[in-house]
Length: 463
Image (tube, rainbow, N blue to C red; front, side, top):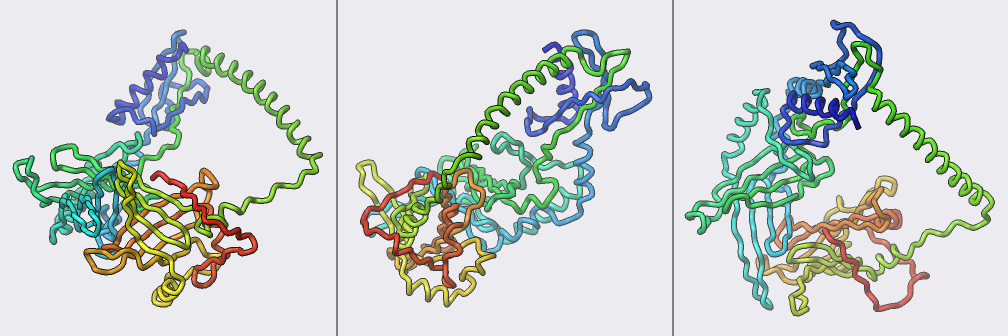
């Protein structure tokens, strides 16, 4: 295209104006050609104006958008709590820790307390734990951070640092935890972890990534919806920004080559739309005269799930876990020789569940119209060496609306207390059984459709 010079010039000027550090394709620009001659003194909405020339010597006065200034003005008006104060609910001792299971190590971030890296070796009933503390929170650290956060908010010229997450530069709030376990390969200096909290509206404070950019210095990214409440830490608006270009010196409304390209494209689009209309019309006629009955919705996946026939297996690290509804929750590892090392995290017992519901009435399901999840107790798992008690798991079954696939399943496993787990199961399958649960959250299996079988299928869910 002969008007590449115009587009390149505009991109270069916008980049210089906004001091872009690397190309960020989340910021979208569109060149608008409103037409009409203007005087030299007349101005279009926007900021700086520049003169650009096409390959055919057509001249245009283009006004660049002022998105950076508009966003800065909104930030200057903000007088709410600092990012640290917004995140402070995470630092409560009652807040569950975040976990990330990798091929060998498990990482545990207890917000406002410590960061831990550990691995468990099991030999029969003997367990050997290898662990390192990657950083700890000092008692007076919050006050130090708060003073610094208020100073940063007061200084409007200080921009939060950014980190590229999924190819998008996101601002983050950093908490540095020091005084970790001494590092023998770093002159016995204590380990340090930088915890970066980035805004992700659908996040659950999960660990996005763990990195070690320097020896025994770690960087952990946490996806948190809380920090989105602060305008300086929200992702920049990705709406389309208009660059208005008007002709000068008798030039056409837009460059000739661009107008011809748009005209040819419209002709091709109209022809394509007409062809598609013909195909759709034939399809509608077939559907109109068809006497076929609509196919009934297949309820087999739901019923098989309720019978425990379809077990769900998840996890990508050394430890994986398996959930069989109405049966058990297990944590397991498969050795290279095929041997399976398994830890029972709980089995389902109706009486134990009812007793648990009676002791914890807030776990009862809400009224049907307000119901979005169910909680079940799986108890009497294998004995925990640290507590001397049986392991147990609360299974939270949550309805997943508008999934990419009707059979999509999402699993996550948390350990808020030692050997007490929370297994989250999110799927459209759960939506179909919410209304069938009684006041204790239990779902009766439709015995008329039941066929006795010992076959159990495991469905693997990669997390």
